[in-house]
Image (cartoon, rainbow, N blue to C red; front, side):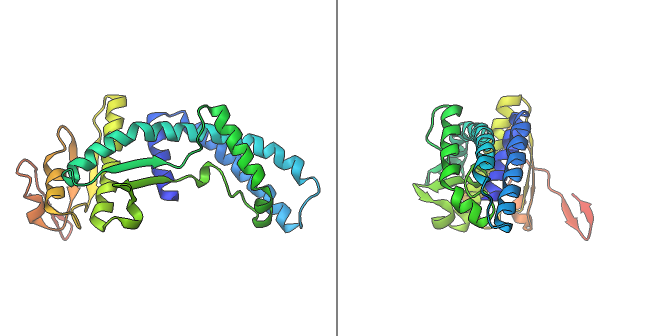
Length: 238
């Protein structure tokens, strides 16, 4: 989950630089609330803990609502692009759905109220363990293939295809927003992909500069338009 959140946060930071300060504000408040919770746990609880936590809960809920809003907006834009790319990778055999674990709320104020209620409901548990157990730092990205969780039911090839679809969709969305074509570096993506998926990667990413590494020369040679280099004992040759 942490890696999936990092993927989304990194992409949001590229598209919306202001998101860096939004995420920093939330993380700072989270660190301070956790420090207070640890202090309470070590000292057996404070009688005034409620007043202090009310302050941190409000700060965390407001900052968290902004984080959640940025993330869900990004996933909303990423979903159709990732689904289209996965459709090409799978030859239309499977459908990829990308979702974000987020409160069902319409406005940032509604999301803030949701997080505030969740923090208050979890207060006893948070004091017992010494850290914050709910909030945007616990949200997760969900990938489904034909409605089934990819990480549970997907094969290694399907899971790898889903990851590729996400990364290529990230690059496509970045190009759409900025007008600049990204350079894609794909390290050893061919293993565990069947021939049709390899073909899509090698021949159907038009207009990009793509650098792909692989261990099988025959795989690289499938793309007749590509320039192929071999690295052997630290020496690069064509």
